[in-house]
Image 1 (cartoon, one colour):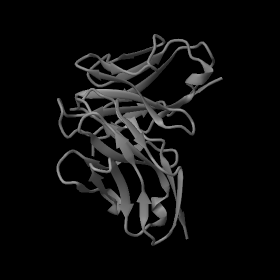
Image 2: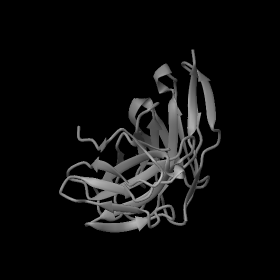
Image 3: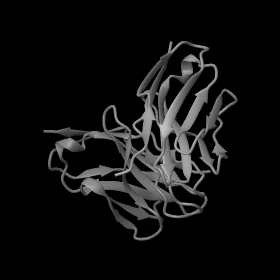
Length: 116
Length: 114
């Protein structure tokens, strides 16, 4: 069964450093997403990506964040200058349908980012 | 705008007992609703979805949920709890097109007592 994969599973970085989180969505999906879950809190939407551009983004997704689909399979989230409050689990998701259809978002296992 | 409220951050039931996890939503347009489960140190797995077809939706692992528009609810149930059901459960809503992000509730931690 196709699944979303994410690497690394755990990333430790120092405050102010840049990190890139990687995701491989399900191959025939059209929409790609990033979410984050701060420890003990709910899952929050960051950004969606369709047709090689950002479709929607939340207020959390500020200028320090960027997303890219550098090739036909990878989808990345870059945080330019990490802060302590960026420590969280980051989930990638993908969905297949276009338009207002019966789409489901399939989630990867997450990358736990720890900023020290 | 859309929102989800999950009543009860923790629910404890005995093995074999009925599981009821509550979810109420707010949406300005007809919503699509989802339940996800998160086992410890794992990602989110889709349990079931409501997409304006049947109001009673059956999912994996014996779970089902009923969409009640008049009550703006989408409660999750399972007739008989199993120890393996212990996990975090999230209700989520989406109202727009495919590019919209899911709005999640805060989650309910289900505890199964032997």
